[in-house]
Structures are given as structure tokens and as C-alpha cells.
Image 1 (spheres, rainbow, N blue to C red):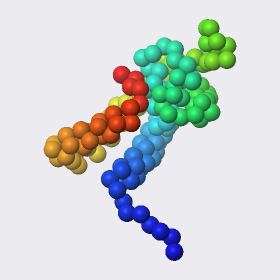
Image 2 (image 1 turned 90 degrees about the vertical axis):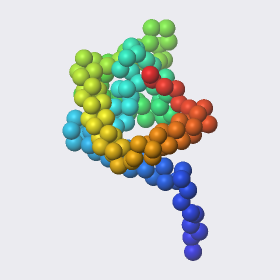
Image 3 (image 1 turned 180 degrees about the vertical axis):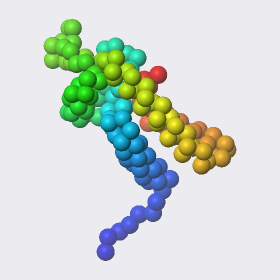
Image 4 (image 1 turned 90 degrees about the horizontal axis):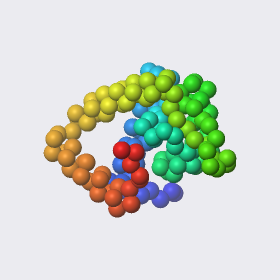
Length: 148
């Protein structure tokens, strides 16, 4: 018989994060033809021109290979421009095209609306406690670099 472990708040948070990403991905693909992971990449480069593929991978805690696959798709749709780095030909710089900026803005509005609807399920006190707890947990791990 397989041993089961009780749910903890962090297991529930991880499950929630997985469901939220899956739902956001489906919603964005159906609405705009881009996935949540691609929008996260676009978020990392929308106001920083250019950013290296290596830096994007580090900021999103993903492998360069995974970022490379996503970037190929974004480039195929004309949403990003990929060019050799000025000083290091082994690296590639990535920036949004005008079409990519427009798509990113559309995605941000859709995700904000989706998240707003979801967060309405919490009371003001629950939301404040949730935000405080999440920020504390992120800080405890050193927190990911913020793109803002």
C-alpha cells in the first residue's frame, strides 16, 4: 500500500498554482493564441530592450532550452525579435516587436480580468492575509528577481 502524506498549506498552494497556470494557459491560448509561459517571457522583455535569453531563463527559473523553445514559437508568430548579442556571439538578445507589444498588452488585460474575478472569491481580510503570507514565503526563498 502506498503511503500518503497529508496536505499541507504549501501542497495546496502548489496545487492551486498548477491549476491557475493551466487555466490561464488555456484561457490565453483560446483568446490570443499564446500560452501563459510565453506571456511570462514577454513580461520579462516588455520594458527592457534587449534582454538575453540566458537572463530570461534565470529570471523565470527555467532552463535555456525551455526558453529557446518558447522563443522560437514567439518568433514564428512575429512577436519577438532575436538577434546576436553585441559583445558575446554565443548569446542572443530578445526584444518584443510592435506586434508582440500589442499582444502582451492584450494578454495582461485578460489575465488581470481573470485574476480579479478569482480574487473576488476572497474577503478583503482573506486577501490581505494571503498577500502577506505569499510575500513572506517568497522573501524566505530569496525571492525571484522582479521585472518591475
